Length: 257
Image 1 (spheres, rainbow, N blue to C red):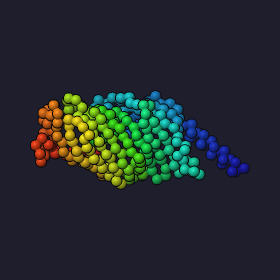
Image 2 (cartoon, rainbow, N blue to C red; image 1 turned 90 degrees about the vertical axis):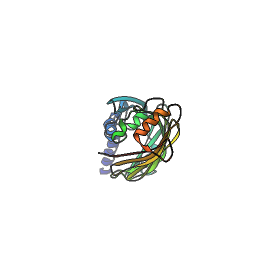
Image 3 (cartoon, helix red, strand yellow; image 1 turned 120 degrees about the horizontal axis):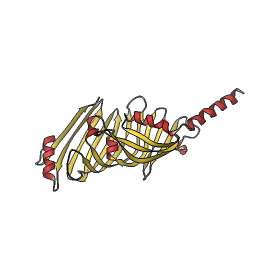
Image 4 (tube, rainbow, N blue to C red; image 1 turned 120 degrees about the vertical axis):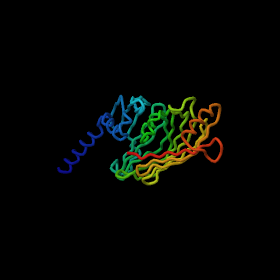
């Protein structure tokens, strides 16, 4: 009789968890992104539903609607015999294609099989410090096999590549600056990033690191094309002359709160 009672209580709790409304996710997403992402038009449950992703435009303080997202419990990914006790995976897809699998287990969480594209301003809204307030635009496509972090420490491993197409900054007039590849590599409590140029009127390469609340970047930049003169003036104000004419050394450092 006792076992039957416990089994019934377990079924009741499982049913209650499965039926949690999707709206429960909205405040969690807002808190996890420091109030820079929100979910709107939320439907379904936490295990299967859909919503519209809103990103904060930090320069204006306005919320901009992004792509629709829908998710479902990836039951086929649960380890045999555990049935969710050791690992829980949710497949998240975007309306126009692409997505990722989000997984959680006792030791931490992970982003797996990432292949998705979002507007650059939605992603750059998550940038720390003043970086997210420069009015970035364009589109970013993220790809990565696995990016894993622990729950209690910022102890992460994995790599994500971001291809930034038609990149532009509000403070720099003229056509888009170009297309850029940003490679993020997590090494324990440090996040390294390497930047290279695929094409464009602003040629820039460099690397940096986010660690212990400090952000640093060092690279070299040069202007090309018809608008090189105007862009060269901006680079001259931002950096210092490099080893070759027309090339400038760019350094950025910020202590994050």
